[in-house]
Length: 442
Image 1: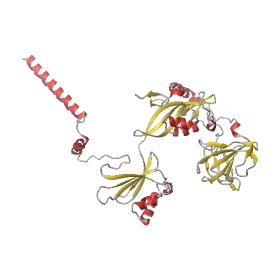
Image 2 (image 1 turned 90 degrees about the horizontal axis):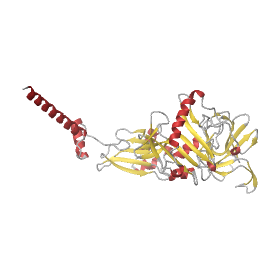
Image 3 (image 1 turned 180 degrees about the vertical axis):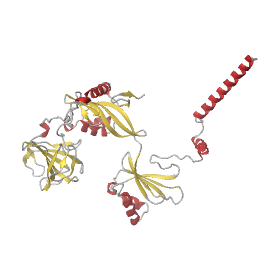
């Protein structure tokens, strides 16, 4: 009798277990094979609310008629809204709502905008989205009363490693490897004191650990560089990022600061069009005369940077120099920046500046044939060729941080050694819990 009851209990327990497993499988399998449209209906029944999918700007799909367009050269905010049927008075009101959020004059040709209208015959405008860049956008909401807001698309950061041998320029090498060109700007900032990017030599090579930014599967930029090894004209240069609560910077493998007293150039990654010379054919006067500076060509409006800490002694205009700024850095060193289109805000005699501060913008004022900055450098009251000078480094890493830093260097080097610059494809990595630890993505 006991045996029979025990068997019945065992059979009942087994049947219950099978039933529960089947129920759980049915639930987590998400009704495999059921079309998405039917899933939406079932989800609506469960929650009592209709499930509405949204696009990358958070606007419900399948609710509005959507059209994408591009701002053409010469078009302004007024042109865009005028073509949509808005009156001059309404456009003025739109501009007023926009100004606290975004400068209307900064709408740029080539940028996309999106129009969302109702599906009915009236096709009433409900939303307009303007893409400021790959990440940021403006949302004009016309549904009730007009609201304008600035938002960002969610960005995912993924660590990566890559290397390469430079044949023509760093820019071309990076683009050929299908890496976002922002990496060039980050490298030029990290190595600005050590590498003359205007004199890159064929055969120079690099290995770098960096962080990419993605929106969905689209690569949209570079967040930063963790470590880099660069061979420039046979000289090996290394830089490792280190952060603590009180400092952040790049140091070589022994903890020496890669930052020096002066940047090598007042612009980021541009080209030299005329070097320091005691006998140059003047492009306007047509005769030979000294050119005691270095000309850097760049697009009109490119920011000009102070190459070192100092005090502005002049911010003025002459017929030859155009708009120019002069900075006294120490009792030994002074610099001067010519042909600016305009000065940066608050740049005037007596203003203090730090290395990397924007002091003005590239132009062609004065005696200039095109947009560029003529950069001049004084040492002990005498103009010199700054590209031939060696400048002192910044403060080394404090001793209290050296142990942690050296451990990070060891981890970074473990990844850098896996890169063959001659045959290096980009490898995506997953960063570990500790700085400098990475795991290759499967």
